[in-house]
Length: 163
Image 1 (cartoon, rainbow, N blue to C red):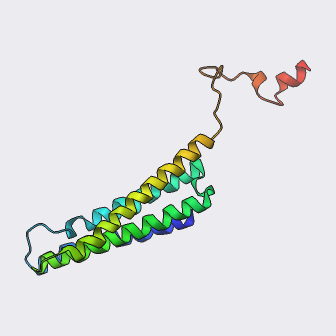
Image 2 (image 1 turned 120 degrees about the horizontal axis):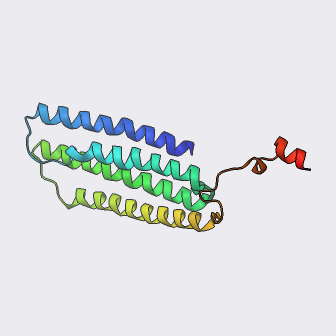
Image 3 (image 1 turned 90 degrees about the vertical axis):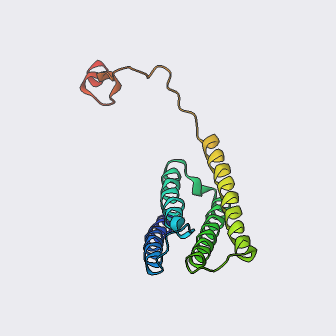
C-alpha cells in the first residue's frame, strides 16, 4: 500500500511539472497548434494520481495486494506502461512544438506503452474480480430497518437482571 501512495505522489509531481513544461515551452516558441504536450499532465494526474489513489482505497477495502504475485505484476506493468506513454507523449509533443516531424520510430514505443496499460487494467480487473468473489457474503435478512433494543446490547443491565 505504501508503494501505491508514493507512486501516486510522484505522479502528482510529474503531472504538475508536465503542465508547467507544456505552458512554458509553447509560450517560448509562440506555439498555438495541437501538441501531445497539452495532455501529458492530464494523463499523469488522472492515470497516475487518481487511479492509483482509487486502487489504494480498493486495496484497503478488498485486500487486493493479498494476491501478491498478480498485484505486483499489475503494479509494475502499469507503471512501466504509464511512464513509457507519458515519456513518448512528451518527446513527440516537444518535437511538434519545435517544428520537427514525428515518425513511426516514435509512435511504436508510445503504442507499446498503451498496450502495457491495457494489460495492466485487465490484470487489475482479474484481481478485483477474485477479491470480490472471495469476500464472504453478508446476510442482511432480518436486520433491515430494525431498531436496536436494550436486549441486543451485551452486558446491559436489562439482560443481566433478566438472568
